[in-house]
Length: 223
Image (tube, rainbow, N blue to C red; front, top):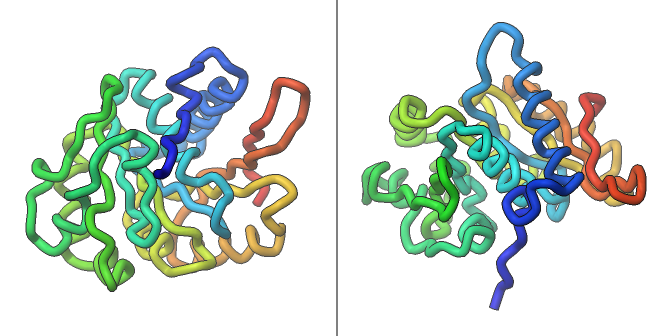
């Protein structure tokens, strides 16, 4: 049995880590001077860098700000959002993309105010093809008008092309790395692949960086 993850921005909103997520939220607002950021992907260079829990916490801090938020599990190869939020994954994004269900059918309310979820749905044999399909374009058009912020959890950039494909359809990407684990060269390669796909890098998150006794997360733009 897979244990549900703790979303610290929800369980302990006054913690230093939660404050760092709110700082990231503020910095993202400054990342786009001429255009309000409405959608972004959260990805990483490699697996196990903490991208999914970062996406979940970012969704929570935006919802706590009063924004209407839609968190979408677009990691169609190794989805985790349903574990994190303790919801079913019997229907989700893939059901819409193969035209089995409508957007309204696949939205799952979270237990948190202002935050809705779309889980991955059944794992398909062709995730990249689905994410680059006309159905995905139609999906984006439908959800954009209904929420203030739309966040996509996507697979690692260097593993598969999915994040680069989806990144070109949103306002940008938040690139996650893990201190003392993720190699700098891998981060540089991930950044290059996203930019080659015309994805704007909005910022980066370095997980697991112990700056002081009570600080574990650091945000910066130098990737």
